[in-house]
Length: 226
Image 1: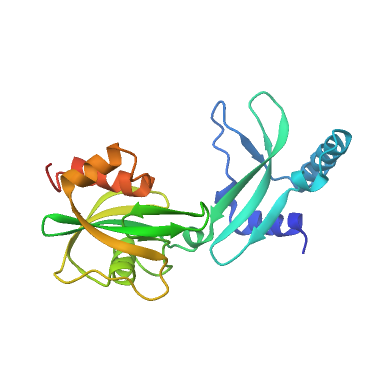
Image 2: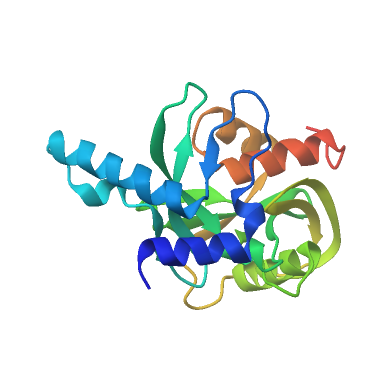
């Protein structure tokens, strides 16, 4: 099955992933098969004329695995221009899984992980987080991530914010030494005070936006005072 055939099958199975709101200024996704084929050939010709590889404008499902789809949509911009626009679609969310981000607090200390992120080829200080698991609620998934990444369970867990693909939590953790499971890309675990956490965020030492957002929303919800 080629890129476009897979794409059209996905459009049929998951139309909500390709919806247009009809609001002024939106970038519209074109899903009519005949129009896609006609406009795609025009774009390929344009790329050929300008010396660009034609596969740079392939429309369809470019790649997929158990975690996500990488697609390039044919789109119409607000000024009427037609082009291709690539995006990643979280496959787990389409199956009902909701990702989780957890700010784990043990006593007066916050637990931080130095975690390797392959997409950036770099290390980041961050809170435990992970993809959703179909069949688990966001809270159940958060507890699973805590056990996998720091081998501890929460005594109390509170959702502080929610967006379409992930839920953010504040958790009072059980006693015990946090440690990661074998195979997790975690270099070290630190326990630091809330004030130090705030300073490290402001200084740019902690840049993971999931972690920063979890911290800010937990503070806004009154989970702690600095």
